[in-house]
Length: 105
Image 1: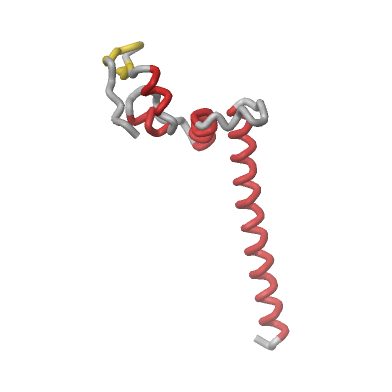
Image 2: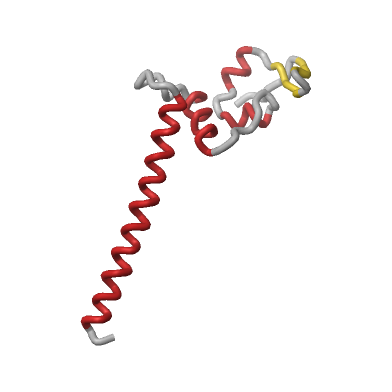
């Protein structure tokens, strides 16, 4: 990736912003690159970070679904997976305890 050269800096609403060319802005595909350049505030939380990544890679286009809906879906899937892993661990723990009891332990 070629270096991004700011065109100028501005202060808008008390916030310092860096203005870049349209070509350079298109090259900033990562939300974190945009944050590092000072063009955008850091995301408030995980869901907003995922929204930005979805948007920066235009992943909402395939399903024509807004990025915030996709981010909510992905966060829900990760939470469901966490729950499934916890349930699996409890099941294995219970199974190990019953095997131990069957062997007189």
